[in-house]
Image (cartoon, rainbow, N blue to C red):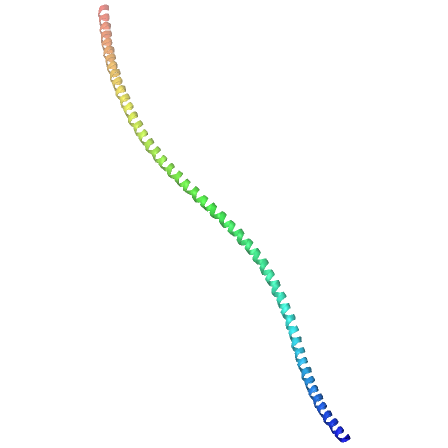
Length: 177
């Protein structure tokens, strides 16, 4: 009975040692898996830190770009306001330019009308002046002819008086003799 019990114990011990070896192998596999997982976790931690740093960098860049974007949007808004003001000013200047062109055209027409009127008035005045001058010359010529006739008459009268005087002097001399 001891032998049977001893053999049974030996068999049970053998089975237990098999189980222990299995458990040891399983434990070694578990430790290897744990170490592998630990390495993977460490790698993940490193990658996580790198990713977080990269994310922070990108966040800072994104904030910088957003700030620059807001500045650019303000500049764009300002430029659009200026463009709108320039368009309004340009339209106003075009309107003023059209008005000035119309005024210039009106002034040109008025100038031409005044020049024509002046020409006609000058021509009429010249005709009137020529007529007055002609009348004055005719009147003056007539007066000159009258005066010349008077002068001739006076000369004839003077000649007659001279002859009469000479005749009287001759008679006087004859009377004295």
